[in-house]
Image (cartoon, rainbow, N blue to C red; front, side, top):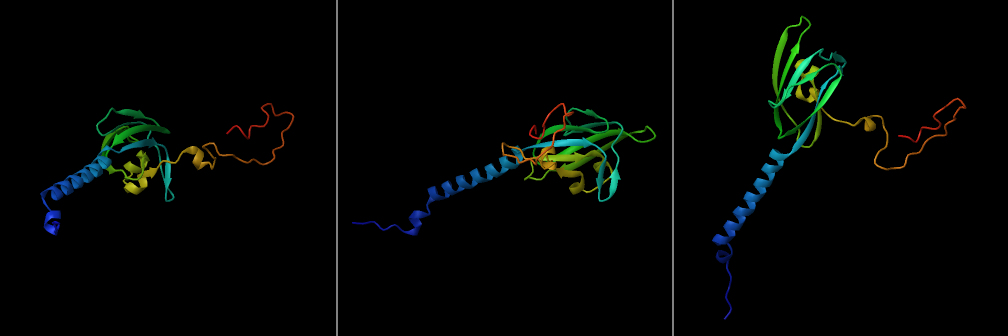
Length: 173
């Protein structure tokens, strides 16, 4: 005799337990992806120009991210902070033009799809929008248009004078 399987036999208790375990695993994976993602934030104290407006670097500042160790910043200083999660706090202590010490606290949220971000302290203190003081980090070689990663690079014919003591350095990049 053959047994007929009906819909009631398929959707039994073990089916719902397996389905619940799969959903919990997927939710846990999404949670761990967002909570455990590591970002590199380059805290930058350089003069920056945004939309034609120039924001001058601070003469002196002490900065800490997520209540971490405070680091001293002078003009043209960029330091790397490795952080986890999306939402962070920054604490900045700096001196204004009259040498008054000012404390500034702010929260910022990092984009999920970007692993390296530059945070401009002068733009942050000017009260600009997060999209303006947080920018994607672009390596200098990429900014200059240099090819990296073992690809071949063609060079133009370069004339070398007899007084050129270093020779042809076009391929040294």
